[in-house]
Length: 251
Figure 1 (spheres, helix red, strand yellow):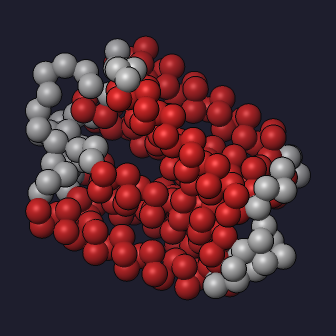
Figure 2: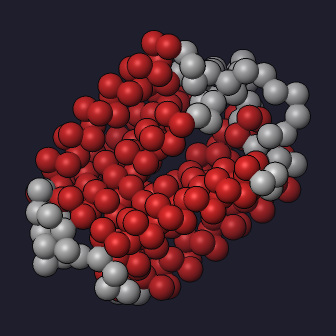
């Protein structure tokens, strides 16, 4: 059965806040679980991802808890993917960043060629939803690699990297306000949220010797962000303000 309505939320300030928090949570959770137990990290990251994606794909409309659970697990799984490629192959973050950028570009090309639109206002068929989640996963992996590239390889440090990506977020915002295509601006900002949230999470959680972190602890950061995300998602679900209204043309 095809969805009865768009399967993604309306793009509001709350959307961006929750999205950035999930990126930080995914980074901290992946690193914290990996340091505690690789087996546990694999079970939570891989098992949680497939469970969340199954729940999301089987629903026939947008449901805030299901959607954001899926985003959260994609955040963890995407981080694991990016880290495994770097560690297992020994490839530099320059190479892995380039690889994931190519994957994202290929998905956008295939999605647009198939559907004629990349607008999140038209994620309303099973095929478009599959394109959407494949692209989201790739953007998380790309953002993880780019964030580590800037914060570690370029020796900028996590705080400075986070501030850099925060400033970069203003570019698509200003462009959108200036009349640039809304879909292009959305996906540019969406990619940037990953290294933005991850950089600040790493800054708070990691030891000072690693990118100038504060040493609060990855699992502590994860726990706090999970509580905050859950509260915001509960409010969104209760209010219904993030449910899309039908739009007849591409946004």
